[in-house]
Image (tube, rainbow, N blue to C red):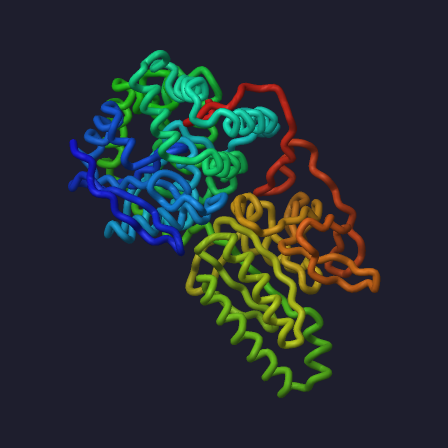
Length: 511
């Protein structure tokens, strides 16, 4: 099987390298793990055979993630939102309107997020040696302790490309290939050709922060979880968690113990056959009215007083100019207006939480140019789209977050923060809050936050400025309540990670 030509898709300002092979059956977008290189991948016969098996029943779309391989490298730490954009860009460039997604190891979270956000473009979801979260937490004991991760990062920087490091990496990826010189050499070429030390560390830091657990309940496409039966590490826990939290997901075990399933021919053959059977099964179309979306509520502070002082005509003209500015910014950030509510606006962004947060900050600045002050609340969660409106708990949470914000402040749930990992947005922990009508206490974060000046006024906080005391919606201090280490204080929260004993990280599945 000859390597297909390399083509490029534009994702924003980034070029994403991809290849297409096979011409039958379902389109299958394939995300390989960690460091990849579209040229080197075709040098290892067992992987080529895996490609051949997939191409017998699917049109396979293979790509290098941004930052590695033949895709643009100088992209900093990529976000999951950007990675999902890359999937969409590659699908568009290859002429694929709808495809199944096959995510292996740390390529799985971007596939999970894509399936939750764009169910109308997903035939099915296949997860190999996959995980929903990287780091250890009390309620996620299969993750890697942060201290182990940091040690690996230091080791990676010091010994990237050296033979001993490559041999250890190869042994972690495929224990059955230990001592296999051909496999070790191939892994060495993949790593050194696929990424520089800085690129690899950027990828690792992004992977370390992955936590997509709160997106799992929003996935309603057929899902298959594949894992090696002989994996004695944490892989079983990762797979079981995915099956327990994705509606209708089922698990298939393949022989072997290698997290990198296609390194062992017997495992690869069984995995390909399981994928073929899964894709050929009849499935009901996904409910495209239920999607993962970022909801934004905004509110003009002091609107009643301002309307009274200006009079109806002047206030109406000012409000019209504000809505024009809001809609102009919404188009720039690829969002969609759902409705206006008096002096507020509900917006929904299908393109991810980072754009929604940037939009909220941009709108705040535009409003100030008009002499207005707004506050905003953001949450990412499952929503129901119905007759031009949106419904669901996620909508209520965003509205309550807006109520808690001060004038000029953008408050986001920790789900928004988790899914924005890798962005340059500063999120400052504002503590746990009680949200009206919603059980429990919810951890909120200030985006591009404010600082209390000596004169008692709030202004933009310089990045890196320490967080101030939280203040409730009436202006009275609301004490910050830190979460216990590893606790899930709210839907979508990320526990405070601690250095706990546990296994060191493993590539391709963290097993």
